[in-house]
Length: 154
Image (spheres, rainbow, N blue to C red):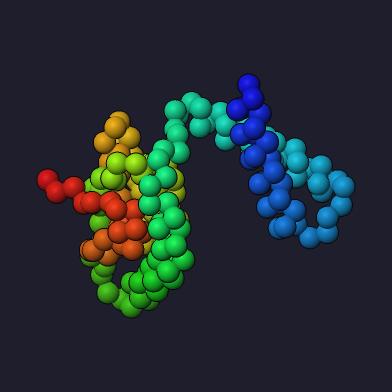
């Protein structure tokens, strides 16, 4: 019960802080409404995570991925703008990646999908940590390289 309460409280704090930052005037009523919404979302997030059996996994390469993320976002935003407004067809498509041992599929999926050039569309975390991603370009992205992901040929 302690982990459930801690996880829900963590979601409550993060989501309430985000809500308070995004609203205009901070009144007691606004804080109460935000707290109620954040508590509901925290309970839902915990329930979904528990039902899915998802775990954060190992943190190998996490620091390297965090350092690479801002540059990857800027570079891929530029590539996306060129593809969208340049009138050229892009050479992207679906690719299968395998994460190395010690890299959690949960946080790695979030890092990859938080860049404009890569979207994780499927995760097979049955011990293999295999991801199916849609990639904007033909080559591996900076985030893929930072995570140590290898493309599965076959």
